Length: 179
View 1 (cartoon, helix red, strand yellow):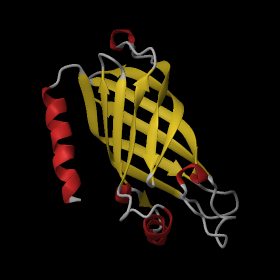
View 2 (cartoon, rainbow, N blue to C red; view 1 turned 90 degrees about the vertical axis):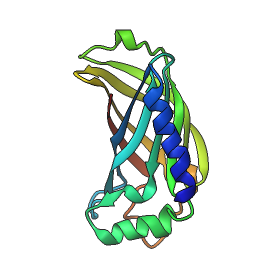
View 3 (cartoon, rainbow, N blue to C red; view 1 turned 30 degrees about the vertical axis):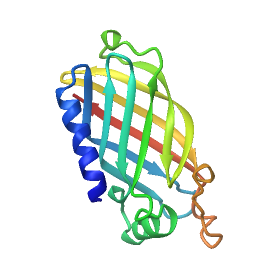
View 4 (cartoon, rainbow, N blue to C red; view 1 turned 180 degrees about the vertical axis):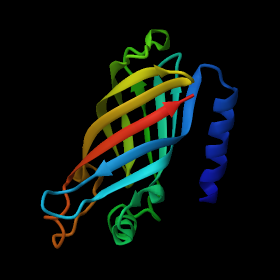
């Protein structure tokens, strides 16, 4: 964790002095890998960092994997130790670009954008395209998105004993309020 502290702090300091960038340190990511007729498999992380450069539409996000919280503590333990291996892969990142983004044209009603970039999770990277709604708020902008990722794309093994209880298609929801 110590080796990530200085780069993360430098990111925050550089963002704080850079004009044209908005950020959040408490963005929300929720994921669900539930299967009908079985116990809900859902977690939320409310400490996600996301930065958008309003001049060119570049976006970068960082989520610490151990910050995902489940309703059932045992699920959280299995998630961290068996599936995502959070000691070995402590963070997930996304770096990309919001296509056609023009901060001056963002309204309170919002507009749908395509975001293209690279998602890194469990030591694997994958190019993804997602759609997101970006709206103007009283103190900045909000970004909301729903998309699906496949566990196979990130070499996340689901043991056969629980494979019928977990979906390989994981629904992800983003809720960021950036200032």
